[in-house]
Length: 101
Image 1 (cartoon, rainbow, N blue to C red):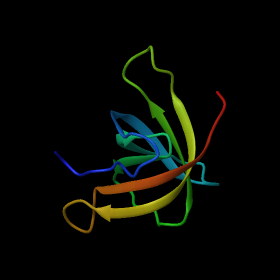
Image 2 (image 1 turned 180 degrees about the vertical axis):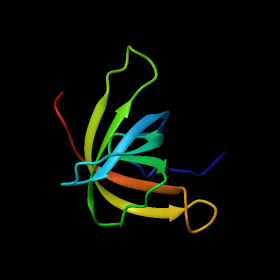
Image 3 (image 1 turned 120 degrees about the horizontal axis):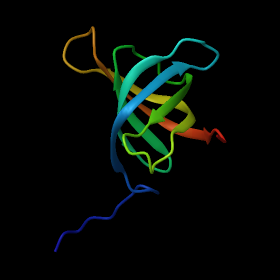
Image 4 (image 1 turned 180 degrees about the horizontal axis):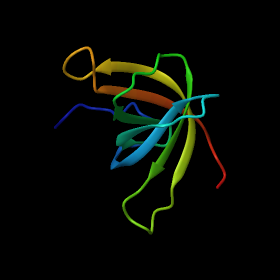
């Protein structure tokens, strides 16, 4: 028997879909790809890095029409280059709020 206890408050779901992201207060979005999502966080990938500790906004556009778009506000927790230092970047964020559509 495995001796493992899940420490996350929410399960993580694979949610591979198109998305856009930007730092709070900016007008221009950058296109990215959502990798997974939970009730408290998100992991996504894109060509532009975001600095940990900064506030950001993400807008997810699911592939299926039955799932509505999602706009969330988050705090960037981690950002690391995938491959070389020029990206793409894998960015993790803690969700702090959801925009009412």
